Image 1: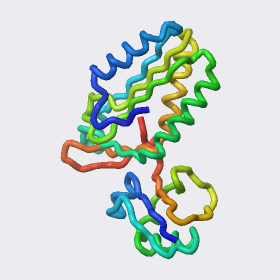
Image 2 (image 1 turned 90 degrees about the horizontal axis):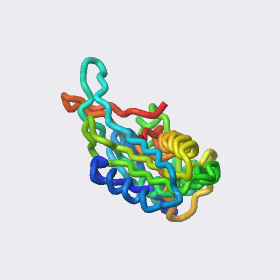
Image 3 (image 1 turned 135 degrees about the vertical axis):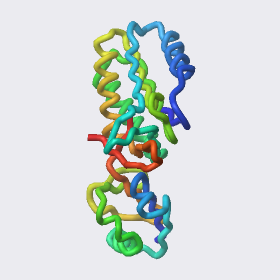
Length: 141
Length: 77
């Protein structure tokens, strides 16, 4: 699990995919990218999201997610998670999850489950920043 | 005992601080009252409590040097 300052860049995504290719036991990589959406609230557009995190706790909770996924999906070989902190503009990537497995079935199911667990378990917060610089705290449903 | 209290997300914003250090705390109940006196606005928000990075569901037994975190609902992803 990596918490990085700023967005997940195309270069970082490329590096993760290249790293996955070194594992010759894998026949499938499932890649999820979470993007900051230009939502509209009360006529104002979201220009960015500011993320903050309880970093010490994120590390421990991410380890629990890894262990939970690895025990549920025995074909999964590796899980990569990158989450942004700081200000991420609309259209930029704030979350990357890549699950590599022997076969596609476990890769895609485990990837979807990992994303759900990240939203539920990791102590990360986001504040939407609108075009007039006002802000609104959001929470996951 | 001395306890560090951490505030995150909207709670850091409404309290105006990320971290407060409390001295001579007798118990979790005592700490809650001290925090409630200092930051009465917290009563309007939902949050969970973590002690040393672990969420607790009941009032914990605090020890010298513990870190108590006030966590609003999560919003990662």
